Image (cartoon, rainbow, N blue to C red; front, side):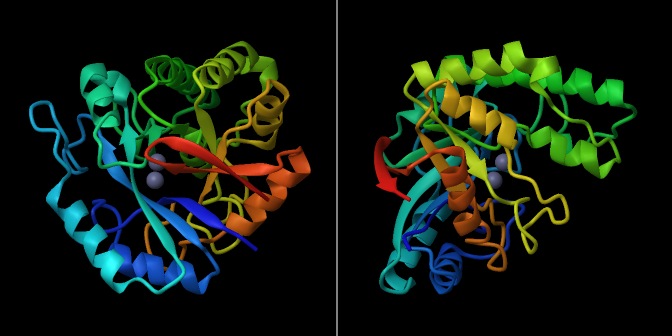
Length: 277
Ligand SMILES: [Zn+2]
Ligand SMILES: [Zn+2]
C-alpha cells in the first residue's frame, strides 16, 4: 500500500534528534514510500530556522542534510524538501517570500504561538474559559494565515487543544461554539486552492502525543471540510525522531476513507498531485 508522510522533522529542527537520512531509513522500514521534510521555521522564534528578512537562501544545514539523505537513504523512498512555516501572519512579507523560494516543494502553514505570546506548549492554562478565549484568538490568527495564502497546506488545525488537554481541560472545540469561524477558515483555504493536513501524531498508540489518541483536526472538522468541497489533504506523522516517523499514516488513510476522501495529496514544487487511497 502506498503511504506518504508529509510532516517530518530532522535535526534541522531545534526539537528533533535525527538527521534526514536516518528519518528516511526509519520511514522506509515502516513502509513509507514518500516523505517530505518539514523542519520548523517560525517567524520570530530564533531557535527555529530563520530565513529573511534580507537573505532568502536555503539554510545550509537543510541543504547539507538533504543532499546526505539523497546519498544515504535506502532505495525506493522518494523525498521532497519542505518547511513548516510558523506564524507567517506575524511578518507577512517574509512569509510570502519564503513561500516563493524555489528550493521548497511544499510549505505547511502552522501556528504554534499567538502574536507576542509563547508557544501553546508553554502556556499555563488556568481555566476552561481561558482555553476557549485562546482558541478563539487562535482561529483568528489561522484565518489571517489562510487569507495570506503563503502555504500549501494548513498544519494541525487545533494544535493548542493538545496542550490544553495536558492541563486537564478536555475542551471540545465544537461547531456549536466556533462553527462560523471554522467554516470561514475552511472556505478561505478551499477557495484559495490550498489544503489541510491530517496530523497523526496523536492518532495511534506509539505516536508522539500518546495517550490523546485523536486526529488533528477533529473528525467533525474533517467531515465539514469534505462537506464544504475540500479535497486537498496531506497526512503527516509530525515525527521528531526515528521512533515515530510514519506512525499513524496507514490509520490516517483509513480514517480519511471512512470520511469519504478517495485521494491524498502529494506536492512537487507546490503543485498538488492526487494519489488514490
Ligand atoms: Zn507544528
Ligand atoms: Zn511539526
